[in-house]
Length: 346
Length: 189
Image (cartoon, rainbow over all chains, first blue to last red):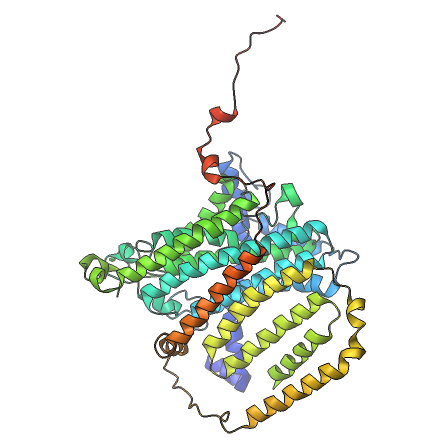
């Protein structure tokens, strides 16, 4: 650190922050690459086939080969497309997926910016991801892309509401919008029994499902719907521009997994009280949620569009509203006296 | 300074852009920059709420509608010079009014900055739910009425809509849809 200060002088804090950002983003990109491989492998074995196994030992170099292939491909801008927005759209798609990581805590100390309203910040930043999809669909000047964009916009806006309510119950439990404090509020001598997922179980389920919908993953991938609208919003994209949409989707998946682990499964806290807390627990929990996402994709057929809307508006939002009231009641006088509630409510 | 320059530029873009989608995007940029300005004024809750509500929700729906409209810009331009004096007069009046308000004594900074340790969000929440609870709830009820009214105005029950009852769909069994018939072989091969 002192060497850095000596080398860069007054711009050192800026350089130091940039280094920290690289230290988060670079492993994230690696994780994204290998998540794609994991997805193909997991789904492969679920469908009783092997999956990619040609590039490198056991197919381990497959994502790198894919990356190089996409880099070498030509980017084609369709005629009649709005060039500026066509290029801007992938940037807008990946920006929120990366910017949200600024406030995600890996351990109590390991967080780029430990700000007060970090949960709000994440909600605000992730709500911007929809612009990438909408603009990609519009700027492509293609019917399929436009239909995909409209579907996706409607879906993301609807599921964001249920997700927001789920987050409200979490902040009611922890009395804070700060992600570090949200995890600390789940600490207790009983380990995983004191995490938020028990008192907020319906919210946890809704959060994971709404997260699947927000990231346009199967079975909610009507925005892509290759059997209906070819590939939806990114049908006109090729090469690296397409790869960036792909990266954004997987980065968003990892982000949702991290948030679900932090909000409902105690983040870096160890599940058993005699084991030490560690960042590895967070990674294990994230891997579990990510595996669920892959599992969903291999298991469920795509939802019909009206069913998606029905699930979001008529099932999830009422359930979250009811649970919001229940959590509020549990925090109030007559019920608050029950000793068992002391496990979760502080 | 940079932020206010971008903000003014974006606001100008909203009015001058020929393509309505571009105008909507300029508005997004304007909201975003305004939120940056608020963030620098230590109003982090307001800043984030601005992005969350306006950029994340309202403008998406705006864009949604604007993209599907087919606006003829030439026709919109016809009355420009005829209405310019009236519009200019109203604009001038508003500038004068705003100048009077902002330069007035009430608008000078009377709020002392809050100490760093106090959470902005907590303070706002406390004020909203204690001192201003009545006006807060009133605003909420007005919004609710507006939502109900908008739906009531536009809702029309179409007789020919293919309504599906999900409960009935769930109850369906394979035997309701599929009949397996045992057929004797018609001709020996």
